[in-house]
Image (cartoon, rainbow, N blue to C red; front, top):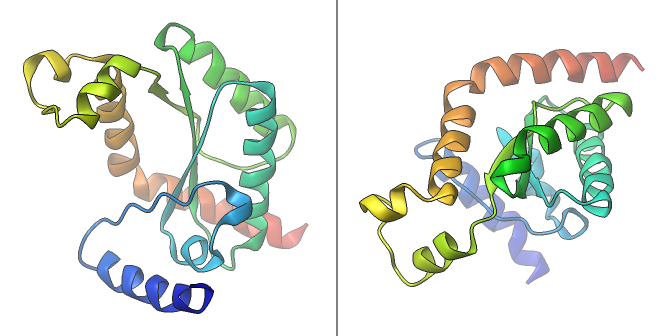
Length: 166
């Protein structure tokens, strides 16, 4: 399978010229480098635990250093909506304090009920599911990454150039 990855990366890169492509890369230590190299934006997802935040910090920093061109990197925390603002703020402080350049951390709600309804084929546009914290936060995240992409890429370019000088 390893020899198939370059072809898969080329196909995905070609498709990305026409449509948005979302690839779940799993853990960063097992990521196929071609996907990271070709991406226009990366969302790095973690839970709001110390172990996951350390993993996120190291992963975002490694991505930034491995790239040969700028990329917008958005950290995403999956957690309880009540704690979202505080947890995202703490992650932003950790990343900034470590000199890791990334977009402001975003939040995706931990909503097992909403997730279960989606897994069995629930319609995310149906009134009851559309009001779930999972769908609301997913819409906010999608809006954030689509509306601000050029802004984030400009910032990523600035961070990339600064990284070349250090």
